[in-house]
Image 1 (cartoon, one colour):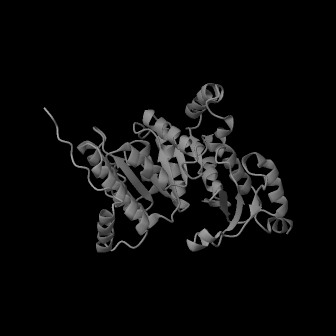
Image 2 (cartoon, helix red, strand yellow):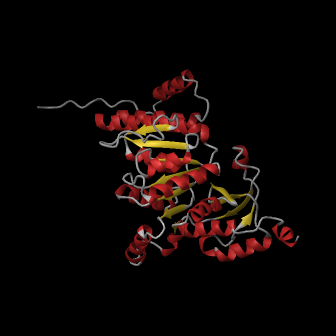
Length: 358
């Protein structure tokens, strides 16, 4: 029995199709980032004309819909620093790890940071409880037996629910400037290793990760023993990648680690092969010379130099008020990049020496 092949649909870049796409964008009044929206529509058309199954198409539709809903929920808080709290869904009160997570979330809320959790029970509930209604954000996953968000976020407008783990992980990581990981099971370890992988490969923006134990416990030190012996020890990763995380059982130290990461460092941006690091205050000439020598292994012979905003940054009005240094980063040794950021954060602000003598 023969099967007739489906006639090939016109490609998304076919002149007739392209004209229809432009008409669609005009009708929808798409003006902002029109080139990007055009690319999304064209990608959907290519997906539709290919050999994707109905299940493939439904997955793409649901994932894009979930991301659209989450982006809209996060949008009003884009300029507010956020910390994401990970940990076991099975750890509830009166466990001291639950109380530790609650206190940590409360501390960050006082500092003006919003607290993002997976919106489920256990450590996620502790994070939402500690943050309070105004500072809590939840990104829930629909699971059998754990379908409902916890009581501290369930009625909050800053809650989004998702079907897929990969879209949920994106939103738990994408918006945050720091991460607290408390002890947990496979899901928590998955989130921890995903975070480390994204930072190690440069697929996520530099950010501090704090692995938090309850006082006297060795969950994360036991984890580090395994990583040191079986990952670093066998050459599966460079020991310098240990700079990407800190382990502590002290609330004050955990808070200082995340806040301190942003003491001077603000953000970075690539301009072709040059990485521009935006800072609250720039190094002196002497400090630049020292930094260039110390981190010569991760940048070109030019070293690290002071710069103003590049033309593309000016065109985007991209934090023009900040100081800048630049380097041609090799894009490989991200543990060393973290050490460079730590060194920049350790610099004294201008005038500090004068103030200290008074």
